[in-house]
Length: 485
Image 1 (cartoon, one colour):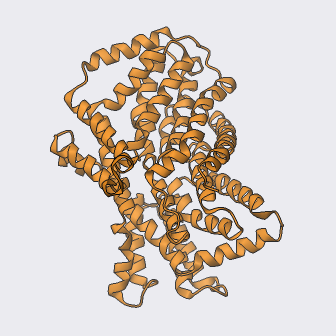
Image 2 (cartoon, rainbow, N blue to C red):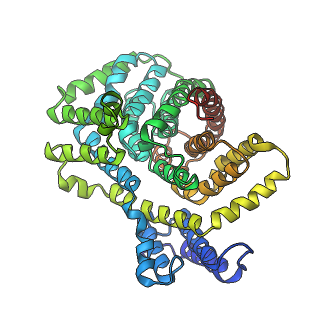
Image 3 (tube, rainbow, N blue to C red):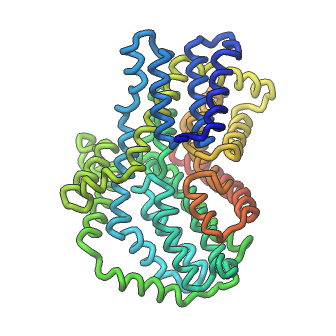
């Protein structure tokens, strides 16, 4: 069968129970309740991996249009169902995924990683920091964290481990392979939280915050990057040290790693013209995303973040770094555009139809009876929001299902809107540390066999606490200096 029948039956059953069996609560319209039924059934289907997420999104769009939950007019219903595909944020993330193909095709991503290792690779911990630095360097233009951590960095890490005969096949992974694999993975959630364009769900957070605050808070690329830079950098500095203390590598000195990296750089040869163009486009996009022209020349020279992504892709096409065939083959980009649009549309109409306000009102009343104030409420909500990810196999599904409701509750209880948005945005990336199915990068690295399930879950739980304490602790000081609360 083209889909998983048991998981599909569960998703359909859940949707039908909510639609037909559970009474519509007081204060909720039938249309809002029926949209919730479609939404939860979609999330259950995504978690159960009934079909690829893009295919599930197409079915969701069809059902929203067919059932008329947003409008009695069939023409308006399909217009509503397709409304989010005009969102610049959807195209920003899709185009950025296409651009990241250039890092792999030209070899620039590999060259950056080998370059850092050739400098800092004298010790195992130096190799770990080199992998982390390479991950950070390419994060702003690789919105697929799976492509970055699993497709670019992991093969390099794997090659280094093999060169030292530290492999699962030989039973020698504890020499250094296990440690490097852990660092390879745990750098990924941190860099994902540092830039809007570092992982696909981040623009969804931007959109949901914008809608929840009536447009009062619009997290730009620069605002996000500046706010997350200090906490993120501290986490990147501490993370390899924490893992080193808990799961230390048996081989601590690796002089051959520098030679290994230099040999690979020599094999790659001089930096190619295409790599130089890719590097130039990378720099140009960072300058425009950071709004440098506007800061120097005035607001009339400001360039929208999505326009910047289109400029980058256009440049790569005109220079031949990427061909149209390359772009057509970048299935993850088109897939992201399809499912992202569907999930944003459903989340937006849950809010517009009043369901989010009703849900947040009930949670607000529940927490309000405890008398903990907004600080206690935000603490409780953030911890629940982060650790409930043990039940999710997709950060996108998690954020789509819960962010708007949790954010609305915090605002109602008095949390400063910008502060709470940043806290939940950070938690939405930190939660990737927890399990071997938490995000797409996890199974890629876990399946390589360097880390046992027990080791993965134990270091995941520890790093979630370490990252949360550092990110929120440093963030509270940094965000206060930035005037965000």
